[in-house]
Amino acid sequence: MAEQRQERAVRTRELLLRAAAEVFDEAGYLGTSITKILDRAGLTAGAVYFHFKSKEGLARAVILEQAADLRFPEGEPGLQHLLDMTGYLAVEMQRNTLLRAGVRLAVEQGVAGGQEYSIYEWWAERFRQELLSAREKGQLLPAVDEAAFAQLLVAAYTGTQVMSQISTGRADLPQRITAMWRCLLPALAPADVIAGLTVPEADTVAAG
Picture 1 (cartoon, rainbow, N blue to C red):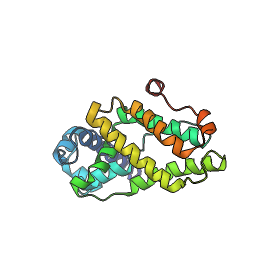
Picture 2 (picture 1 turned 180 degrees about the vertical axis):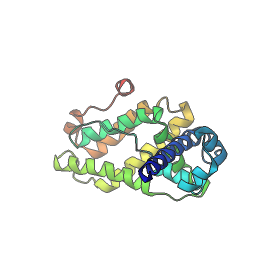
Picture 3 (picture 1 turned 90 degrees about the vertical axis):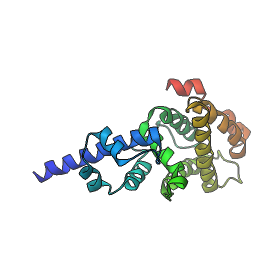
Picture 4 (picture 1 turned 120 degrees about the vertical axis):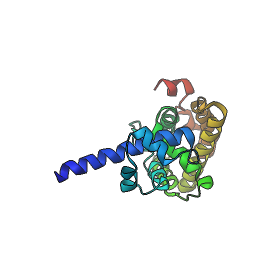
Protein backbone atom coordinates (compact mmCIF):
# COMPACT_ATOMS: atom_id res chain seq x y z
CA MET A 1 0.00 0.00 0.00
CA ALA A 2 2.81 2.41 0.91
CA GLU A 3 4.51 1.64 -2.39
CA GLN A 4 1.30 2.38 -4.29
CA ARG A 5 0.96 5.72 -2.50
CA GLN A 6 4.55 6.57 -3.35
CA GLU A 7 4.03 5.71 -7.01
CA ARG A 8 0.85 7.79 -7.07
CA ALA A 9 2.70 10.72 -5.50
CA VAL A 10 5.44 10.47 -8.13
CA ARG A 11 2.86 10.42 -10.93
CA THR A 12 1.02 13.39 -9.43
CA ARG A 13 4.21 15.41 -9.13
CA GLU A 14 5.13 14.62 -12.73
CA LEU A 15 1.66 15.61 -13.93
CA LEU A 16 1.91 18.90 -12.07
CA LEU A 17 5.38 19.59 -13.43
CA ARG A 18 4.28 18.95 -17.02
CA ALA A 19 1.12 21.03 -16.67
CA ALA A 20 3.08 23.85 -15.08
CA ALA A 21 5.64 23.74 -17.89
CA GLU A 22 2.90 24.04 -20.49
CA VAL A 23 1.28 27.04 -18.79
CA PHE A 24 4.57 28.78 -17.97
CA ASP A 25 5.67 28.26 -21.57
CA GLU A 26 2.49 29.84 -22.87
CA ALA A 27 2.00 32.67 -20.38
CA GLY A 28 5.31 33.24 -18.62
CA TYR A 29 5.72 33.53 -14.88
CA LEU A 30 3.59 36.61 -14.33
CA GLY A 31 0.80 35.33 -16.56
CA THR A 32 0.57 31.98 -14.80
CA SER A 33 -1.52 31.18 -11.77
CA ILE A 34 -1.87 28.08 -9.65
CA THR A 35 -5.49 27.91 -10.82
CA LYS A 36 -4.44 27.72 -14.47
CA ILE A 37 -1.95 24.96 -13.66
CA LEU A 38 -4.55 22.99 -11.70
CA ASP A 39 -7.06 23.33 -14.54
CA ARG A 40 -4.47 22.06 -17.00
CA ALA A 41 -3.47 19.14 -14.75
CA GLY A 42 -7.00 18.30 -13.62
CA LEU A 43 -5.90 18.24 -9.97
CA THR A 44 -6.90 19.90 -6.71
CA ALA A 45 -4.99 22.61 -4.85
CA GLY A 46 -3.91 20.11 -2.22
CA ALA A 47 -1.79 18.28 -4.77
CA VAL A 48 0.20 21.40 -5.60
CA TYR A 49 0.88 22.44 -2.05
CA PHE A 50 1.85 18.92 -1.01
CA HIS A 51 4.60 18.80 -3.63
CA PHE A 52 5.64 22.39 -4.32
CA LYS A 53 4.21 24.73 -1.64
CA SER A 54 3.79 27.68 -4.05
CA LYS A 55 3.90 28.90 -7.63
CA GLU A 56 7.49 29.93 -6.97
CA GLY A 57 8.32 26.37 -5.97
CA LEU A 58 6.76 25.01 -9.13
CA ALA A 59 8.66 27.50 -11.28
CA ARG A 60 11.93 26.58 -9.60
CA ALA A 61 11.28 22.89 -10.25
CA VAL A 62 10.63 23.58 -13.94
CA ILE A 63 13.85 25.60 -14.15
CA LEU A 64 15.96 22.92 -12.47
CA GLU A 65 14.41 19.99 -14.35
CA GLN A 66 14.37 21.63 -17.79
CA ALA A 67 16.84 19.08 -19.19
CA ALA A 68 15.03 15.99 -17.90
CA ASP A 69 13.77 14.91 -21.33
CA LEU A 70 16.97 15.59 -23.28
CA ARG A 71 18.82 12.77 -24.98
CA PHE A 72 22.02 14.35 -26.19
CA PRO A 73 23.61 13.02 -29.39
CA GLU A 74 26.13 10.27 -28.86
CA GLY A 75 29.70 10.87 -29.83
CA GLU A 76 33.25 11.21 -28.59
CA PRO A 77 33.66 14.22 -26.28
CA GLY A 78 35.28 17.25 -27.86
CA LEU A 79 34.47 20.15 -30.13
CA GLN A 80 32.39 18.21 -32.62
CA HIS A 81 30.26 16.77 -29.85
CA LEU A 82 29.80 20.25 -28.38
CA LEU A 83 28.63 21.54 -31.76
CA ASP A 84 26.25 18.61 -32.12
CA MET A 85 24.85 19.19 -28.62
CA THR A 86 24.08 22.83 -29.28
CA GLY A 87 22.52 22.03 -32.63
CA TYR A 88 20.33 19.44 -30.92
CA LEU A 89 19.32 21.99 -28.28
CA ALA A 90 18.26 24.43 -30.98
CA VAL A 91 15.70 21.92 -32.23
CA GLU A 92 14.62 20.85 -28.74
CA MET A 93 13.90 24.48 -27.90
CA GLN A 94 11.32 24.38 -30.69
CA ARG A 95 9.54 21.21 -29.60
CA ASN A 96 10.41 20.36 -25.97
CA THR A 97 7.96 22.15 -23.69
CA LEU A 98 9.75 21.40 -20.42
CA LEU A 99 13.08 22.69 -21.76
CA ARG A 100 11.48 25.76 -23.31
CA ALA A 101 9.52 26.62 -20.16
CA GLY A 102 12.55 26.11 -17.93
CA VAL A 103 14.67 28.37 -20.09
CA ARG A 104 11.95 31.02 -20.25
CA LEU A 105 11.53 31.02 -16.49
CA ALA A 106 15.29 31.21 -15.91
CA VAL A 107 15.45 34.30 -18.13
CA GLU A 108 12.36 35.88 -16.51
CA GLN A 109 13.70 35.59 -12.97
CA GLY A 110 14.57 39.27 -12.83
CA VAL A 111 10.91 40.13 -13.27
CA ALA A 112 9.68 37.39 -10.95
CA GLY A 113 12.20 38.11 -8.19
CA GLY A 114 13.94 34.73 -8.41
CA GLN A 115 17.66 34.07 -8.15
CA GLU A 116 18.08 30.46 -9.27
CA TYR A 117 21.48 30.59 -10.94
CA SER A 118 22.49 26.95 -10.51
CA ILE A 119 20.93 25.88 -13.83
CA TYR A 120 23.28 28.22 -15.69
CA GLU A 121 26.19 26.69 -13.78
CA TRP A 122 24.94 23.22 -14.74
CA TRP A 123 24.92 24.08 -18.44
CA ALA A 124 28.31 25.78 -18.20
CA GLU A 125 29.79 22.68 -16.60
CA ARG A 126 28.38 20.45 -19.36
CA PHE A 127 30.03 22.67 -21.96
CA ARG A 128 33.26 22.95 -19.96
CA GLN A 129 33.65 19.18 -19.89
CA GLU A 130 33.44 19.07 -23.68
CA LEU A 131 36.03 21.83 -23.90
CA LEU A 132 38.35 20.00 -21.52
CA SER A 133 38.12 16.96 -23.79
CA ALA A 134 38.84 19.21 -26.74
CA ARG A 135 41.92 20.51 -24.93
CA GLU A 136 43.18 16.96 -24.40
CA LYS A 137 42.83 16.38 -28.14
CA GLY A 138 44.76 19.54 -28.99
CA GLN A 139 41.71 21.18 -30.53
CA LEU A 140 41.82 24.49 -28.64
CA LEU A 141 43.93 27.58 -29.05
CA PRO A 142 46.53 27.91 -26.26
CA ALA A 143 44.98 31.00 -24.66
CA VAL A 144 41.45 29.58 -24.35
CA ASP A 145 40.13 29.40 -20.78
CA GLU A 146 37.71 26.48 -20.81
CA ALA A 147 35.62 27.66 -17.84
CA ALA A 148 35.36 31.23 -19.11
CA PHE A 149 34.47 30.11 -22.63
CA ALA A 150 31.80 27.75 -21.28
CA GLN A 151 30.23 30.66 -19.39
CA LEU A 152 30.39 32.78 -22.54
CA LEU A 153 28.73 30.02 -24.55
CA VAL A 154 25.85 29.76 -22.07
CA ALA A 155 25.38 33.53 -22.21
CA ALA A 156 25.58 33.63 -26.01
CA TYR A 157 23.15 30.74 -26.37
CA THR A 158 20.73 32.30 -23.89
CA GLY A 159 20.75 35.66 -25.63
CA THR A 160 20.48 34.08 -29.05
CA GLN A 161 17.40 32.08 -28.16
CA VAL A 162 15.75 35.13 -26.57
CA MET A 163 16.29 37.14 -29.76
CA SER A 164 15.00 34.24 -31.84
CA GLN A 165 11.89 33.93 -29.66
CA ILE A 166 11.09 37.63 -30.00
CA SER A 167 11.82 37.67 -33.74
CA THR A 168 10.30 34.43 -35.03
CA GLY A 169 9.00 32.39 -32.11
CA ARG A 170 12.32 30.45 -32.30
CA ALA A 171 11.61 29.30 -35.87
CA ASP A 172 15.04 30.61 -36.91
CA LEU A 173 16.94 29.40 -33.82
CA PRO A 174 18.92 26.70 -35.68
CA GLN A 175 20.11 29.27 -38.21
CA ARG A 176 21.07 31.68 -35.43
CA ILE A 177 23.02 29.00 -33.56
CA THR A 178 24.89 28.13 -36.76
CA ALA A 179 25.79 31.81 -37.17
CA MET A 180 26.81 32.03 -33.51
CA TRP A 181 29.30 29.21 -33.93
CA ARG A 182 30.76 30.67 -37.09
CA CYS A 183 31.59 33.75 -35.05
CA LEU A 184 32.86 31.91 -31.96
CA LEU A 185 34.93 29.11 -33.47
CA PRO A 186 37.83 31.30 -34.69
CA ALA A 187 38.35 32.43 -31.07
CA LEU A 188 38.29 28.85 -29.86
CA ALA A 189 40.18 26.61 -32.27
CA PRO A 190 42.95 26.79 -34.91
CA ALA A 191 41.92 27.01 -38.56
CA ASP A 192 42.97 23.43 -39.34
CA VAL A 193 40.80 22.11 -36.49
CA ILE A 194 37.83 24.20 -37.61
CA ALA A 195 38.23 22.85 -41.14
CA GLY A 196 37.68 19.34 -39.79
CA LEU A 197 34.50 20.20 -37.89
CA THR A 198 30.93 20.04 -39.09
CA VAL A 199 28.95 23.03 -37.92
CA PRO A 200 25.32 21.91 -37.74
CA GLU A 201 23.59 23.56 -40.68
CA ALA A 202 20.06 24.75 -40.11
CA ASP A 203 18.43 22.37 -42.57
CA THR A 204 20.40 19.38 -41.22
CA VAL A 205 19.56 20.24 -37.61
CA ALA A 206 15.88 20.67 -38.38
CA ALA A 207 15.74 17.30 -40.11
CA GLY A 208 17.28 15.62 -37.06
